[in-house]
Image (cartoon, rainbow, N blue to C red; front, side, top):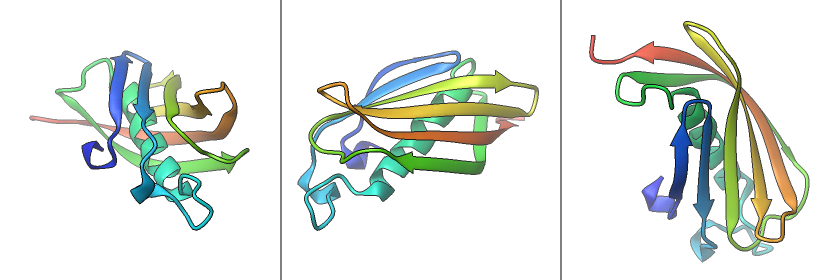
Length: 119
């Protein structure tokens, strides 16, 4: 995610937050941040929340992800991910993208498989 310029702000068990500064390399033909960029970062931030309890020993694989684009994504963006429910092997998360004016531009939900690393 560093290639995109993503800046992690906070990660803890069940919650993650990051900022994506405006980047002209990540826009579509209308100069809005491309939807694929939003989905990639949402997948990352929701999975970070899902493994925030033990990030060195738990990995994740995305099982499914649903995304809804609500408004135009311009300027710096804030990504937040929250765990809705977590079991031994599966986590359900939701994510939001807001701009610096507080406008919600995108929402997402995803299911992740939790994978034990370093066995």
